[in-house]
Length: 402
Image (cartoon, rainbow, N blue to C red):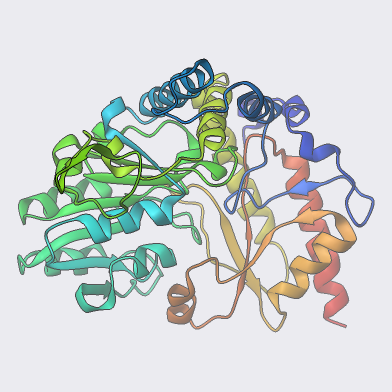
């Protein structure tokens, strides 16, 4: 394995969270970035500056603080647009991926069927409502069943196909290009949940070909409470206004409502200004790194973790080293509750991992397993983190097997 492609270990110094003490007194080893990423100091500083010198009503306050807030807010939109290969008027700020998916689910005027995969996150499964959702069971290996999706599309009564770009359990990616082509051929749009793929480098919305794409800032290192809905201009125009209130109106006179243009008509109420500015700072931080090296760094850590985990006794891996896969590594131990391992890692070794159904309980049910464990990585991780975590897991598994 080529470790020369790894980012420098000194990047960890950019993240203040690593300076804090852990319950065990050991240094923090953070391997739960698929849930939420740690924040670099550049983001903390940007948010603090916004709270001090850019406190104002975005688009509303006619004073110099309001001007600063509005300017920073819209500059952040431009930063996000460039990161995903889109235009400013294609970027809608939301609270998170879940809210973005719900905006589409409740605002898309075509009320025909929606196809989702049981492999995916609960947000993708629940947003659309039971009455028009068709859930496609996974293949026997737990992957998205693309052939089943094609068969449903051929019935020509499907409005939307909603899929995770990268599985938050296995790290596998469906064949988005083929799915988009088939969906468009049969008159359906494609919505991508990019929550797990966004932290791995710039998303090229134009080459993906999807109609809508959503992700959360906190997985990129921004504060929580900000997400992004990107949409093709013609698709955003078709979205009905779901959340109504201040900030979205051009005028309200004589009972006649005139909405602003996109994207502002879809951003009701006072936005999370500081979090939006923090998202732009997080993206700027990542853009300051070599994007290709970031991708290789995360792929290398994932491959190394799978290779080393496979040597542990009683382990069952849900993730595999395969072309196109990225992101988290999930697994479980036969006869050992995952939460016992996760709690032991946290309290005795200072290692933070995820345990549970990973917000994908139907996939676990299909595979006939209980809660799993998950390791996930970001730019601050190194091979040494994985080595220490795996040796800690080995000790806990051995202790609980007695």
